[in-house]
Image (cartoon, helix red, strand yellow):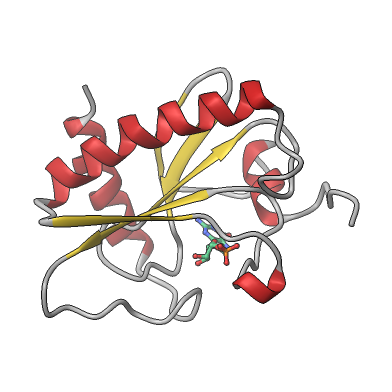
Length: 139
Ligand code: 5GP
């Protein structure tokens, strides 16, 4: 399938849609998931137009993983997360719903189940407050 230049993350990258931004550099962007599965659920995307892991250039893959590690450390610290789950879905059968590759960073704690994937919209003010906490925890 050809990359859809109007997918929501491409639109966020072009500034056409808002996001609760956590981190940005020349190659990547991190922001709060609008329908989080847990408090602090953060997404990391490359600026390169790639639908999935198969399409991504090795250089963009390296940048994506470096930012994912950097932001994961900040999410863990900011949310005081005992555990942290990374997820990256390729293709509809795997559950991918936005066709611009991204890593999910999701805080986990024993006894707390994940909320359903991409189901309930979070209050934007709450997302902004989490983003501010994560930004403050970045090295
Ligand atoms: P996927 O199913 O492709 O792995 O994950 C897509 C993620 O993007 C979901 O967790 C969903 O909640 C999130 N999402 C969908 N639309 C938007 C949006 O417009 N803004 C933000 N920040 N997240 C979104």
